[in-house]
Length: 228
Length: 137
Image (cartoon, rainbow over all chains, first blue to last red; front, side, top):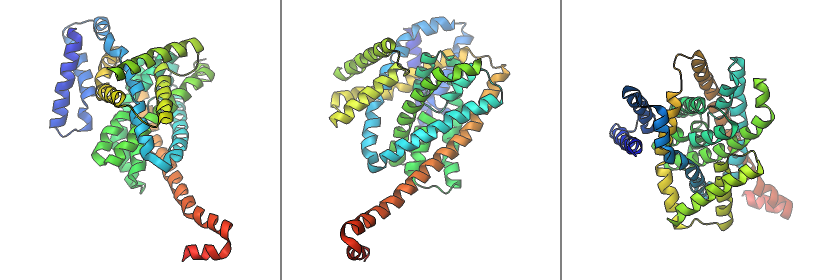
C-alpha cells in the first residue's frame, strides 16, 4: 500500500510542477516520476521485486485502460468524416515503413534480437508496446527505452519537420504526432489546436492497433529467424 | 461503476479468448478492437462507459509508472548496445516523421484532387456536355 501511495503522490506532485512550468515536454510527469522513484528505491535500498509486487494492481489495470482507448478513437473517427479511409490507408503504409525501417537500421548496426523486437514497437504508445512485448516475450526494459527515446524527441521535432516540408494542415501534423510520437505527440498537439489533438489521438490509437497486430504476426513469421 | 465493470469484463474475456484461440493479437488490443466495433455498430457511446473510460484514460500515465520503474531498474547504463539502440531509434524516428508526413500529405492531396474532379465527371457522364458546361459556369 505504501508503494502505491508514494507512486500516486509523486505523480501528482510532478504533474503540478509540470503545469506550473508551462508544460515543457522534457518535464513530462511520467518520465520524472519514474526517474525519481528509481533513485528513491536505490537510495533507500528497497528491492525492485518488492516494489513490483506492491504495485501489481496498477499494472493489472493497464489492460482495461487500453480497452478504454476505444472510446476517444471512436469519437475521433466520427469527427474525421470523409478522410477516414485515407487515414486508415496512411496508417497501414506509414506503419509498415516505420516498423521495417527501425528493424532495418537495427540489423545494419547488428543489434541483437530482443532489441530488434523492442525497436519494432517504438512508435506506439507504451501500453500498446508493453502489451505486444508480453505476447512476444520481448524484454520490457528495452521496449520502454525504445518507446520513450522515440516519443520525446519525435514530439519536439515533428512540428519543425512539417514546417520545413511546407505542410501546414493541422490534421496531417496531428496525425503525424500521434502516429510517430504517441502520448508525447498528443501532449504536443494540445499546444497546437483542438483539431491537431483530435487527429493525434486518432493517429495514436490506429497506429497502436495496426503496429501491435502487424508486429505480433511478423514476429511469428519472420523475426525469430533474425535471432537464428 | 457499470462502465468499469464492462471494461474489466471485456479485458478478462478477450484475454481468455486470445489465449484459448492462439490468435496473434495481444489480449488488450483485441479488447479495444471489439469495443470499437461494438461502438461503430451502435453509433453511440453510453454515458457510464464514457465516464469510466475518461477516468481510466486520465490516469493512464500513472499506471505506466510502476512498469517504467521496474524496466529502468533492470537496465545497465554502461551497456553499449543501449546507446546503439537509442541511435537507431533517433535515425529511424527522422525517417518515420518524414515518411508519415509525406504519405499523409500525398493521400490528402490526391483525395482533394479526386473530390474536385468527381462531381464534374459524374455530371458530364449523366447529363452530357451541356450540363457539364452549366456546372462549370
